[in-house]
Structure formats: C-alpha cells, structure tokens
Image 1 (cartoon, one colour):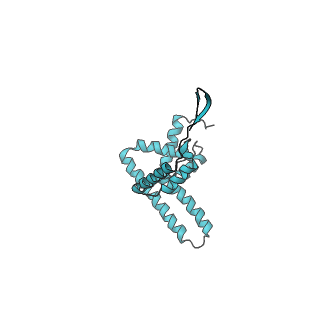
Image 2: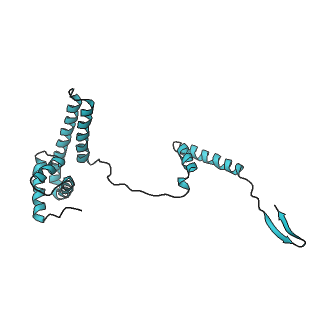
Amino acid sequence: MSAPKSDTSTIEARKNRLLELLSEGKNQTDAAEILRQENYPADLRTVQRDVRSLRGQWGEANMNQYEALREQQLTRITEKWTEIDNDDTMSGAEKHLAWSRWMRLEVDLTGTAAPSKSIVGHVSGPKLDSLYLDIREVLLDLDEENKQEALQVMREFAKQRKKPVVITAKFITEGNNDANFS
C-alpha cells in the first residue's frame, strides 16, 4: 500500500526545502532524513524522484550549479574514502562497513547502481538440453573460425555415427500373408 499523495503546496514546499538542503551540501539520504524530521512526507525514493523532476525544471543555468554541487559531493566522498583507508584505528571489518556506506552514497550520486528489477525469460526446448549446454560451454571462448570448425567436425561425426534406418513393412501377398521385407 502506498502512502497518501501530497497536495501541490506540500510538494512545492518539500522541493524548495530539498533545494536548500542540497545547496548546503547534504546528500539525498541525509536530505530525506531531515525532511522526515521536519514532517514532510518524504522517503529516499521520494527525494530521488524530486531531484529527477527538479533536474528537468532547473534548465541549463541551474544544471551547472547542480553539477558543481554533485562534483563537491563526489569530492567529499573521495576524501572520505582516503580518510577511511588511512585510519589505522579501524579494523578491517569496520573499514569494510564504512566503505560500504560511502560506496552506496557514491552509487546513488553517480546513478551507477545495479538495476533493482530484473527481466526473467523462460526458455524451453533444446536450448535447455544438457548436451547443448555442454557444447556451448566448450565453444564459448573460441573465436568464430574455430567455432565453425568445431561445429563442422561435430556434424561430420554425427553423420558417421547415425544408424541406418531400417524400415520393416508387412505386405500381404498372394500365398504369403506375413512376408517381411527389410
């Protein structure tokens, strides 16, 4: 169940406050938390959606300012990486947790997060056959010429190994009702 929709004046007030927070150097996660504390209906997804809509409204002049802010935040993140790396008081696990947090912020800021949805396709038929998968795995790393050569060798081998087709037919002839011809 989704949250109730905000009215236009609340949305505009939230976006204006978001702009203030971003111009103060807050990242989107911190801005979402501050907005919630100030009783704005805003979670991180709402803030991200607002930022995307604001990008379209800002125009070229404001985009330059936004990009400068974004670069400042990326610089801050880079400095934090160095600070964590040089901190001799932190254990390996503590550094890992700190890196994870800052990496998440960087991924959010740069938009390089992995997709959160996946597309699933179901394939049936010979492509799922284990022999096909084995052959595919063997041929996968070959260049195109060697793939074609390997396929030709397999085709020739298959032709040689095919069993002859035996047709058994029953014919009823005069005087011999059970004659078999092979």
